[in-house]
Amino acid sequence: MSPNRPSSKKRAARRGSKQPTSNGEPRLLSGGNPQISKGEGDAPVQAYIAAMPEWKRGLGERLDDLIVRAVPAVHKAVKWNQPFYGNEGDGWFVAFRCYTKYVQLSFFRGTSLDPVPPKGSKHPEVRYLDIHEDDDLDEPQLTSWIEQASKLPGEKL
Image (cartoon, rainbow, N blue to C red):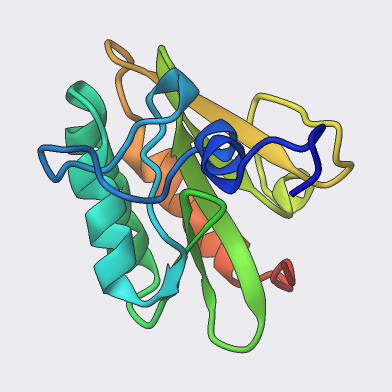
């Protein structure tokens, strides 16, 4: 081992461990986003939702339910510590993740939705919806965005 290179244990500690905490709970990254191993299908998405802290868990359950009701054949996966939803073989149309004070939905072709979701991105087509604890969730609008997004070409990630 090089004298200037940290040990593998120290390098792993800096990167953060994918291992659960000592009590078996998934680790929460900065902002409270659960650290869940990547995987395809409903099981890793449900593990992510179960690990969402506090009020965000109930919101995650509602979002997952809305997406499944709007797009019954939706394909699910966890990538980069967030649930992704798409059409099998056509890419992803929406994802969400936890931040300290809100949950953010990412619409990958958001500029093609009507009306356009409120928050812009450094990526030209992406639009966001930030949902805070006390926000009223406009389920009809959200369902409309999900349905519209599912009919657009998906994002290949």
